Image 1 (cartoon, rainbow, N blue to C red):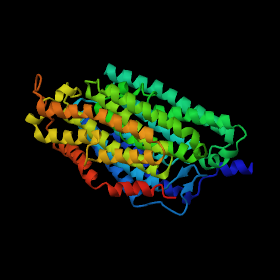
Image 2 (tube, rainbow, N blue to C red; image 1 turned 135 degrees about the vertical axis):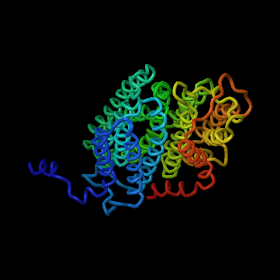
Image 3 (cartoon, helix red, strand yellow; image 1 turned 30 degrees about the vertical axis):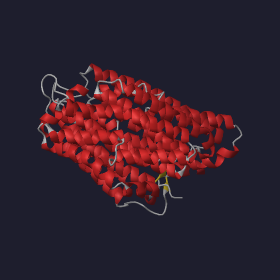
Image 4 (cartoon, one colour; image 1 turned 180 degrees about the vertical axis):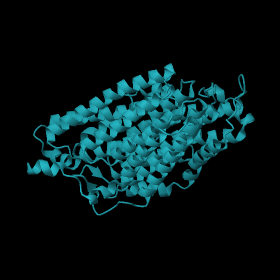
Length: 488
């Protein structure tokens, strides 16, 4: 009874201090949910503005170290607040705020913007933050499902679109399958080690009575992780969901959640299952190779820009796995740098489509970009920055991100994987350069496509695109933060 009472006791105030950013975010989400009940459709912009400010406030609280104390692990080690968590959370909040700036004009023009869109984004960010700070299997699953359920609802926000409804159903069904695989793997790990705490699992792993049970659990967890990332051969949901969802929703689910997924891999495999690194590293290496091959080859054949970016996402997941497969602190730092870089690039890439789209027309075909430079040189220049960064052309940010994970793979003894990465990076550059080619050298087909006359949207997109060039020239501070997260 004493143990049960101790378990059910309210946490001390000092234990809640590291959770101040999360508590502030959930308070903001519930407050906006209630406020939205009293707003007219013409006043919905207030919910949007307040949600962006809430994310910026939370990012500021984390960056300023509010709530940081001597204890990095609280709530019986279920919640961990360390350097990696703080860097990823700041990145998650800022990129999600950026995504919301793209969401508003697109959904407003189509009459799709409801107050719950911003609230769902806030709850999704809360799920990401819990997942990033997870110190136990329970917290991993709690954060993951909060993120997933919010994402399913966001994809289905356009209820009158058959494409969006189909995408939401596929996302829900296959997401449930992925969650089932992950949960089954967690149950096997618990059965082998007798604990849900990742630190305890790490200590117990070398001496478990049933090592095959533990290894089987890890295999199922990797399958679940691959599903959530969209890594080949578990990528079947990703192209249809990216294509069917409203473009700014695709922008959101294709950027910030990658940071949380990276943290999940580090917490589950890099920390909890680290004694089994010799077994799971080759599995990640195979997933990386398959993702690089399938993602780049299939992307070459796409004429729809959203589907091309979806398949290219699979290849970028392969690059991210390059660093993780090495299993070293250098590899984790390189993959974290890649995840942050890719989140920024994905935001800009889908932002291109938002910028050129208008009601009744989706600028999601590559031929829609033909002759863009002749009509709007500024927009064409910004798109060039985005595509060049995705292709890994120096001095853009994407080049340094690819270089970091390739170097980590070589230093981790994965030379063959680094060679695969280099070969398919060259192949993958073709479909990005094709977009640049049609903008600058092709004549427009049909009615000319002009960017929307929205100064704020053009400013946001310009800052995002130019940020890839600026960060490419001054990438050392970002890499230093990533390396600091894995200093022993």
